[in-house]
Length: 498
Ligand SMILES: Cc1cc2nc3c(=O)[nH]c(=O)nc-3n(C[C@H](O)[C@H](O)[C@H](O)COP(=O)(O)OP(=O)(O)OC[C@H]3O[C@@H](n4cnc5c(N)ncnc54)[C@H](O)[C@@H]3O)c2cc1C
Image 1 (cartoon, rainbow, N blue to C red):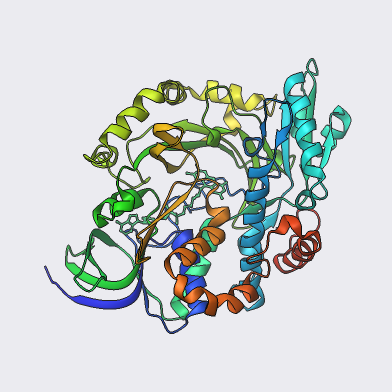
Image 2: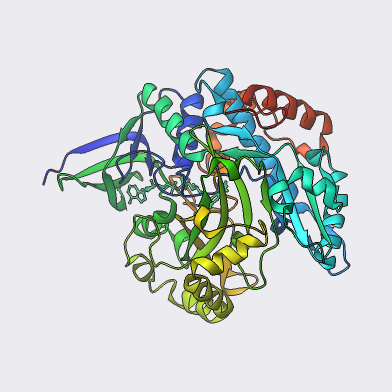
């Protein structure tokens, strides 16, 4: 056991997309600050950010029906869709800046154009989709979106899904060529490679076991080397807890009052994957359907073209699962040890209120492969069991807290929790997820470094020209950004050969 001590300006806990993004932003804003990263696994981007642990959808509300809700008067509320789309435009601008500045060489290594589609069956859902399309297509953020309920048009767009389909119920789809497939694992690794070159100290197989405030207001971390068992103390003026599912425990250890009363509920994701080139070649889109009744929003079924290491495959899911682990590589004790006196009542209230979610999860866990294939056959009527394998993806820890909606409310978004003095911040939740990493990390910067933001603003605007501007009110800027990011990231036109 050693007790080496070091002091640095910034510590990032976890080497996922969030820490990678915050580290990259800070390195551009204040190159002199010393940054250290601690990661419990052997390399970067191995947990939720890994390409096989998430669906790689560049979420921009072009296809996800759960971002638009039908109001009691029958109109469609598109405010969440606009927010998610604007956030993705922010990510694309920062990624473009990194490419233009040669900090990332080839965008094709992490992002490719893949059309985004919504697909529905039955009269009620077709009517909803049409209304959704009418509301969105008036908005410049959704320029170019098309709608069709004509089976022959749909056969052009999604031949694999239309083959052998019985047309005894109305069907319809929307399609946008502005959609993307993002390899968040590759992006995370590219960003950490870049940070390493900029002298960021990245320490793998080092687990943060404890976080304590020091008398001068800094934070001292107890870090265990998972190979040698040695424990070291590292101090920083600012700490970002980017531990993904592991963040809740670390936030609780920090003891900040803002972290009290919050709980977490893990939901696992499983996908079916097809790697057969002759089947994969028949489908080029990310096609999102309607969530089954009682399913949580992140369980919306979708059939996706994935492009990983320049190889295409098809992914279908997610099926929900239950494991008490907060990380895929976590411990079976994660859920139980996250229950503390300050969140016990909240957690119990959530248990009572979410009985239908529990029933849904139990049913999902019990599904056989053939039952999962039946769900897939809603999308690909003639799908054969032998062509598809089961893939266990990442864990999502949903936030539970008391809100205006009541005690123990399950939240499906992401939330930055920070100390009032901005010296520590944690990111909880996982939706819309990695796609919005840049906006969420800008939020961390705004909340934790308000004294510097004015001085940093010109550089932020150089990286993200729309910073501080509501895109919705600036259709010209939307078009400019769309054109320039598409050019830099290679996103114009059809899916290119990979
Ligand atoms: C099934 C599924 C599908 C998804 N689909 C999409 C999608 O299509 N599009 C999208 O945008 N997002 C998607 N997401 C969400 C997205 O994957 C996450 O929001 C994102 O990857 C989270 O990044 P992160 O950096 O916060 O966490 P992670 O990538 O999980 O990284 C956290 C890191 O912290 C490390 N760590 C944890 N605790 C400690 C500790 N004590 N000490 C040291 N290191 C620690 C972990 O080992 C890990 O490497 C999906 C997620 C899941 C699970």
